[in-house]
Image (cartoon, rainbow, N blue to C red):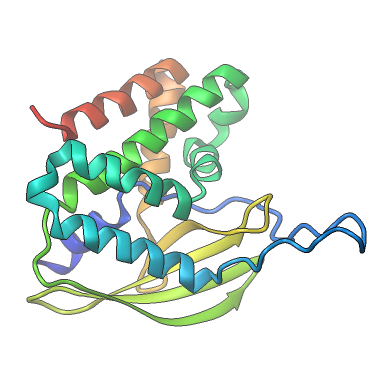
Length: 215
């Protein structure tokens, strides 16, 4: 598998990060039982990779629909899709009604899961490794290495931030520490919304999701 094609497969439906408050919520009083320890940022990525590989190994048996159902909770748990949707849509997000924003988030989330279900259809000896974790502004960077059966390893860096519940979530992915696939997606989404309106962008995402499913 060539280097850039492997990157495109992994990037799927990720976004340029936006401002998210990284603070973890604290108990209201000393008498309140502390919340369970939040999984580390690296654990979030490791768990996602584990579920991704498990699905790939059952890929032929599951088919697209089965892979979608198996990956849906994994994708929605690992990635902060509502935040990613808002940033990917760009300036047009603030022009959308609350109902349209909800439709956009659902369409983007479905599109993201469909990408994984379509592109990761089988396992061919790929190895996914988490190699480092380091702080960055407002969050952490989890560096990973994806080694295909043939070809050179690909370095993918996950930008992690805590959500409103204090859980680590993925908000962006970078190839070699610099290239964000969703910078391109943002340009595409913003262009459609500006030219044709928010409903057109919702419909476009829905159509793309359908095209990736079984014919």
